[in-house]
Length: 442
Image (tube, rainbow, N blue to C red):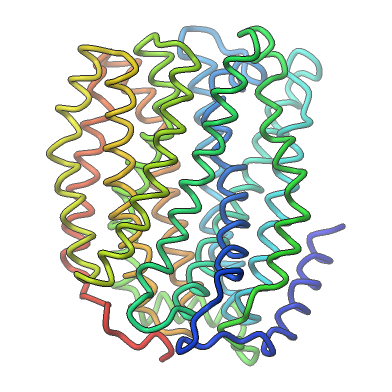
């Protein structure tokens, strides 16, 4: 099945979606929420599982010399996946504003499936030479394209279908589903680390989580076909017109939103990097390192929902600012404690606090920005904010942190990087207006 065919089928789904329209008065059903976040969780699982096994992927596809050589190449390739996110945000975000939310969400699941299949099936560098890393880079680009277009339509649907006073909680399921993806990846990481020898894990074990996700793809597509539609689309407008409108009329929100995303993207990727950090820098066992991923995922799931509830009670700005400031104050002492006494208790505690605070302000940011955009360009605007922010800041985080550790040999490098990016985001969030009481159907 080609991408063109999938796009046509998705558009057909959007054309019939008016029958399934969900009103904010009644709210989206629990089944529809599950459909929205299940596909999102699957896509993020496919994307982030690469980070968990970066050490082994580096050795398989990037035979670069030196202690950090293959790891740098692997995390650089992880970052490559972020740089097609803006393109995905433009193309799929505009498609969602033109044809409807549901067809765009079906398309993204299909696209990421191709990328995941390629990663799981590509032979090693030893088998096919330079073709191996080329294929891996292409697959990461395809995954990034899909994820760049995923967040806008999915979040827009949750916000537009939420009942009054519940938009923060409903949209927080977007971040919570990402935590679920992280947790499931952590379960696979711990299980495989315990069951397989390091040699088997490096040889073929890291491919297993990718293959498992492919089994779930037909289910994700099926349940997404049952989603309601919350926006009839702008059929008379071209995609270029929609994108141009965002840049012309909503430039301030776009710029501030990207800067506000900086700390969310960096803190999230530092959390994903904890497996590599624990093994490479702290010299902790692989099973324990993967356990930190499980902890991070559980805390992200729980505290994203807490952040969503608090958003509805206290407003968006408070939940955006207070956890960011807390992270700025705590992250360096926490990493000092971890570096001075590496072990299960310190690693899991630091990971838990980092994930909890990041999830809270991440959930708040993901509802505030789209609420400030009109419905006609909401998916495109949010897709661009999220994709550009995560590309510039999140996509470079693992490479920058690995490079800083290699150059400075200072285990505090990840913490200081989080502090710097948090300062940027606090200023940006302070300049964005409160959005709790805006009319999202405008």
